Image (cartoon, rainbow, N blue to C red; front, top):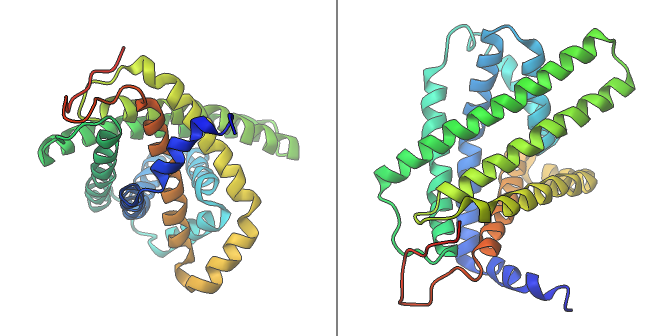
Length: 278
């Protein structure tokens, strides 16, 4: 019981209806931005003629949401064979609009964790969100480039089961630090208050590791989980997978913010913009 005592505030935080509203709002915007983001990445890889980078995109999507979603994406690409001849500005605009929507409820949720009662204006939220989109998008591209370079080096040395294991290992080695850095940027810059980045470094690292463990947990229960979704939702099951996985992941991210803000929140009625130690 003493071991579980530090986690009890987080459990109570998860039980609040408002937190579930934030989580589902983030998940819905992930679903809306998912395919435009995928199209932009594939267009970028094909425009430079780098097949290994495109395969790394598919692998990353499968690692996040399962092989079934990856197969749906590969099948969906065949529906639009002429889409990649020219850059899709529609996909880019949809991506920017829907990705910004992810950071709106997330800012409100993080402000609530830090005891901030005044949120940014819509315009300022869009400005900050745009900066985070480009920063996190650049980190995603960096992870893809590193994974693609590893895939090409393994192809040069021949395909084998050992090479496949090494490829997955190097993907994890590239993706996990990128995820932690993206989480650090979100925790540090998104709340409408001053948050010390040093305070958030261990939180971002811990949440990144928990999200990685969460992916392995989902893979362990995947056969049963997938069968239930296919029976209940039919052809829409892959969209439901994206929403549910994104919701659970967002709850973990929000729990990290709640944990980091303990002891730094102001007493009620004293201040709406707490200052965290650097």
